[in-house]
Image (tube, rainbow, N blue to C red; front, side, top):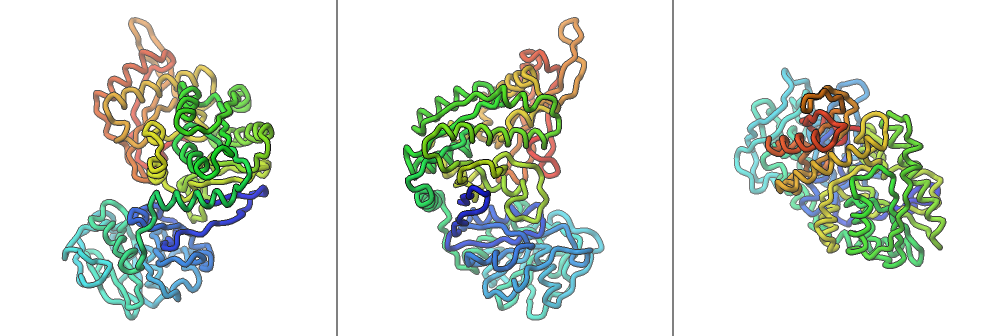
Amino acid sequence: MVPIDKAGQSISDRSAPRDYIAVVDFGSQYTPLIARRIREAEVYSEIFSYLEPTSSIIQNDPRGIILSGSDASVYGDSPPHLPESLLELEIPILGICYGMQIITDALGGAVAPSKTREYGPATMEIADLSHPIFAGFPETTRVWMSHGDRVVLPPPGFEQLARTEGSEWAAVANENDIVLVQFHPEVKHTQLGHAMLRNFVLNMCDCKPSWTPTSFIEQTVREIDSIVGNGVAIAGISGGVDSTVASALVHRAIGNKLQGIFVDTGLLRANEVSNVEESLSKHLEVPLLVHDASDRFLNHLNGVTDPETKRKIVGEEFINVFVQEAAKIDRAEFFVQGTIYPDTIESGSAGLNSAKIKTHHNTHIPDTLNLQVVEPLRRLFKDEVRQVGLELGLPDELVWRQPFPGPGLAVRIIGQLSRDRIRSLQIADAIFDEEIRSEGLDRVINQYFVVLTNIKTVGVMGDARTYGEVAALRAVITEDFMTADWHRLPYEVLARTSSRIVNEVPQITRVVYDITPKPPGTIEWE
């Protein structure tokens, strides 16, 4: 948990669990997957940029370090560099792809461009099954390659562990517990990648599998109690799973010293306000103050079409409303927010080397907020948030609610906002949700919603010509929301959804289905 003081600076970066793995990011899209795979072994992991000093990376004494891949070349212009003295640490190190190549180059080996870029599956032959990284492995296994350079000569003291047809040195290691692999064990396409990472963490780093929802709740509740003490906290509740679980955690720690505030921005899903009020009063017992600020938000967004500007306006006004409402609550000192780990990664605030993709509402905290911020879920991925919610005893209807962006429908309506367009999208989205649930797919699909595209198209209804908007359906499956694939919805579901939307929403005359994975697209359109 990372509380923030009134000036926006960290009060106390609470220590990570005792057994944890540091992941050094060189800019790979797969880096968050490395952290997720480690956590699946019930060991905490945290991502650091290669630009951070080694002292920051090891400040909480990690049991091991993993270096990520990158699309850079060690021989390119200004390639990502190794943090100073990292290889002098006396802990196990695993270098993946670029991580392998940069260590090879640093220790006197040789890296060269491949004749052809090796991208896709490869059969790997393991030469040394006695090494703990390959404990329990068969002699051959399938791995996923994605590289332009490759190691042609390992550094002195490194022995071959495995080979593929395209990479003689697919895996090497030395006696100091440095293991280098050319393939990507973190992606699901590598057949035993999870087992290999688990072997590294448990066998080589001697970590104890203690990162569980129960241990997280116990530690976080203690931290919240020590921070808030006798103060009063305000929870920013949206009805989504993140803010709900964050509020439940804080409520367990401080009880009736928590006050919930729900801001109706006018950009919510159909019947959102009444659904949230009913659910929270029934299950959380958190007093809830509902403030209708829809006119205020829509006035500020009038004529705005740029998505980043929309996000900033909604974020700023959201905080402004909170400042206004907080002044009405006696002794309010803390602001509880449902920020999760992917929010900090995509907004560029997690210390990663990757560029900011978009401004996240949950990470936009201006100095004008005269409250200390408590973000109890800042370390967690979405699926971990759900696990914690279930462990807290929250009902399925709250824990499995569809993810919803902080700026709400402002970023699902391309172009200018209007009350008519908002209402049209609310109805269309509710129809899509009904059809998904009726087919029993609401637990299979990780996120689904409708977008108004701001594209006008001709239609025909009866004998009359119509001219309305194109609505796009989006449904994705994902393990961590950092990468995602489009769900192959049954044609019958698509047909029913399209027919209902066109017939029940007069402003929409055409429905399309988005089949773009992430990357290259994001899950949300804006």
